[in-house]
Length: 244
Image 1 (cartoon, one colour):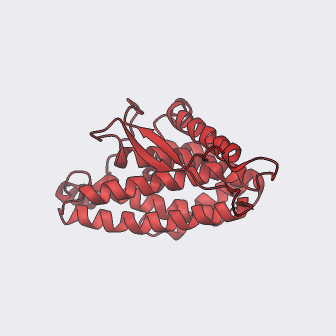
Image 2 (cartoon, one colour):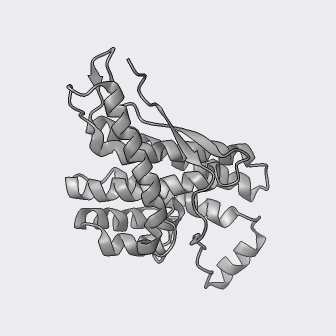
Image 3 (cartoon, helix red, strand yellow):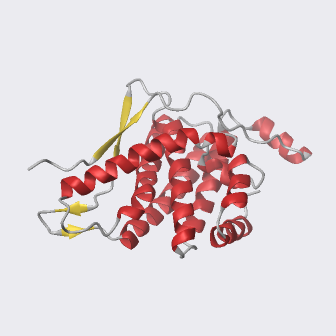
């Protein structure tokens, strides 16, 4: 019996252009604040805030249409964010991520869609906590190399969970190997989509952009999201005090 796929390779060669650049500050206080920040701190802050917002959104949508948009958009944005942190400057050709386990023949078990969504939601909460510590370390000019690695790997794994939510409740007549093969194909599709969606968004989507209502990803979200996903984003922006 073939062993089911449980790993996914995130290649070092992925995004080559259309990288997100934060909008320039308009207010004197913020301009002065940014001038004192160590290099990379602003993006770390936006990633922290974007993850809090993503976590809020993922916990406040219910309809299938809203969930489909949210899980897809957060999956491609999270996979790109994971790549920037985990694989972009790697000294190896690819980094390993974990495919979510959707089936186990020995235990006659299949992961449910709701169970996988819950894991992804919890993963976003943990990612926001990691990003908060990471941003603080950046501000304090501490060495963040290992934190960057760990956060990026975690983001990549959560992105794969989000991407695979529609594959939950796999039929029993499929073997675990077949189910995990479908999950691997979904991960490959998400990786490809995370590249080409820049043509629609205007830049490579990344979680950090959710913190700025005027960023390309946020504008894309408001223009394309179903009503429930749109309202969840607007609510998240209002509830998270650091955003905007």
